[in-house]
Amino acid sequence: MNDQIKKSIIKRLRTAGCVFAEEEAELLLAEAQALDALSDMVNNRINGSPLEYVLGWAEFCGHRIAVEPGVFVPRRRTEFLVHQAVAFSIPGVTVVDLCCGTGAIGVAIAKDLGWIELHSTDIDPTAVRCALRNVTSLGGQVYEGDLYKPLPSKLRGKVDILVANVPYVPTGQIKLLPPEARLHEPNMALDGGLDGLDIQRRVAKEAPLWLKTGGHLLIETSKMQAPQTVEIFSQNGLIPQMVHYAELDSTIVIGTNPLQE
Figure (spheres, rainbow, N blue to C red):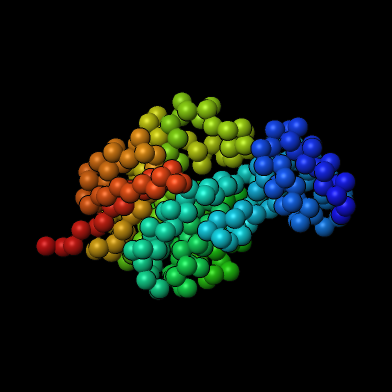
């Protein structure tokens, strides 16, 4: 496709407020199979659809993750959660990814370690459908349901790594999110309740029932909420630590299921 088309796309994207118009134009041109398809993609992007919805994928930890409209788009900051989980893992560990969305976190952990026993859950049917595309190709299992409820009982006390990028935006702050998230991603993937910590409390409460002795729960949170997340972990018998990575503005709280006396 000629330079004139590319320049036209860049101009339209820039006019629509796309900050990285040149990069987005390159991606759209590379993905489109024909001019009609390209036109539709550009129009969808200009009308506010997240770029990942338009492309059908998101890059996460160097991997392409299939993304569908209506599912939470994996953020680059969450790559730090993956790196922390991998640091506590060896090939063959049992990993559970709660509120998995696209399944990106579990997929990235599996690809980094080479092989894991992966179980991913989400309450949203759209997310589950999307996660099936990403997770099952690696031999993982995907379940539809609320947090731990759909997991097979055989996993109780057997999980090495429990990862959970649960909703943690306080309800009153949803309106402050960028339009791409606020208008297009499901509210249930964003809203963490009055203080943003409702789902974290539920995850931490049951975590000791599912984790092995010495197993780890890792949750992404905000730097401001982290002290409360640490306290939630302590209240539920987990040994907490907080780590922050300034470059991605990513904060993770890690809870270890203590060794038996």
